[in-house]
Image (cartoon, rainbow, N blue to C red; front, side, top):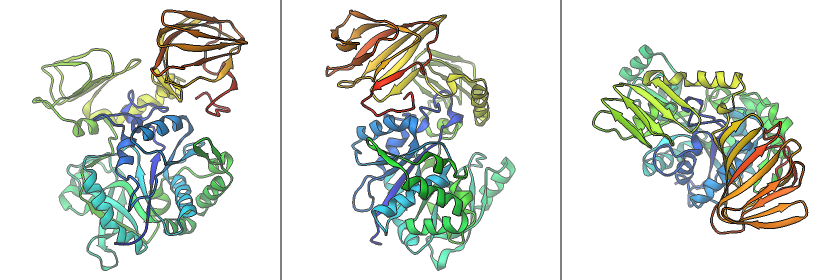
Length: 479
């Protein structure tokens, strides 16, 4: 056994656009419980719990997701994660560079294990066994990729062709070729030849080796990452990278920046069940099926339907006489698509973004560090929300210049600050907050506080908030 500590690096920068409408930019698939009770990022973190082999995880994520990720990790008992905030998305190479440098700050002999946050691995024991088996290869200087033996001619995955044994070893091969998402004919050929593996995106190597390879093949990325880390700063429980430096990084994957250029790339054939849950079709494959091949979740009724994925996160959803269909219902959107066209869902998201639609970025329920809010109804000069405040939490002290608000407590007790007043508002009681007043909502109780907020005025967007004081040090954002 090689005596090197592994720093697990959870890369949580993806938005999962092919899983819209469940996955949104500010609440992507890795933060959602797609199969079971835990989210994908929670499952990822639990596979690499700190101990004899693993150090505390390093997590790279978008600023909008920081509080939710921290809360989800705490829910599964991981309170020591080093959460680093990316000011903009720059793909996996800059994130990997930052993580390697960060790991070396803590341990000059550290290894790094790059882990996408949104992958589904059904057997954690076999995953850890695969990592254990690759440690010696990585310690010898190889940059090790984990390849998955294909079970079907999938056109949504990248492939790795195995070459000669790496350094004479039986447990690793040189990487002979990368093939990015082949067409169906080529994927069928790969499956028949048996020499290609799916590229899992999981990488294990010495942190110093990764830095050396970045210096050789992507020096601009390494320089920008080093500057972004050195000029960053602590913000509550997070570390903020220096925005101008990180923004200067090219947006490129670690595969393109390093793996396809280095002579030290090795691949091991990993024996664990794996899926990147990259589409609704992939989720259908990873889900239990009924006797007709249907995978269902939520309040769903299927009649004379087969080989379909039907999911509802609220509304009763009924499907009759369908085959090979995906139907997904959320509070504010419905998706219907043939199961073999789910790779094209990202085109829907592109249209929503180009049209400035909020549904590309937010769910109807928006999570905040103090709780959540859900838009119930909107119209000309009014907006109605259901607000949930966690026990002991409070919103920022704030004011609005374009709207007044009415709060009606549904359950729990609210402590309300209104200019110089402070009052308790209990169930079935209400309070009026006139335009321009300084106000704050707190939950002093031990149960969640639920209230209805009615906004009225000529402008009701979230950017009509002037923060006067905030427990979460939010400056320059609306999270």
